[in-house]
Length: 251
Image 1 (cartoon, rainbow, N blue to C red):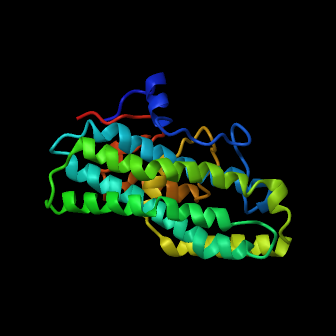
Image 2 (cartoon, rainbow, N blue to C red):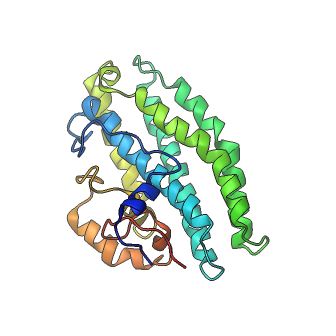
């Protein structure tokens, strides 16, 4: 059940972890058109999806009813899956693509290690709750979430400074074009019509970047009106409704 769009709701989507400031408001850039110019902006939009989903977990963790606990745990595991997928994509596609181009990725790789153990501990806890091996505990949920989210969000902010336009311009255009092709092919393979795509659409602040994600309009419509029904109980815990309004879960 969603709250009405209000200033408090908007504040909740952006706390306790602050989203990344975009290079323009709204951000209309596309890496498919100019990778060097728009890489940092588009990556900031992606990172903000993750940050706002973590904020939703934080606020809703203390509110979830016993009846809705399975759905909350399902949504939380989906958030972790999205984080895993994002960083696996970076390690498989982005970091190798820019190796030897004068674009340093070493610090980003090290920062991935900083939150790994904490995220694994949170995931184990959620799986135990899901399998009824542990009772859901709101305080413990927040404690485990904070342990990995603090270094993760720090990394999400820091990484943007390593892919600014003046840095990305060091890479040859052929390298950048190939990176975009490889990235698009990888994302198509992932699919996620009933999971990752509705997750993204309900964790993205549309006003920030109205052209993102770069999906065909018909796919966005189908996701909102058809595919999202498969895991319909999850989306009440997302930072935004299917129509893009900020929300907070109400038992």
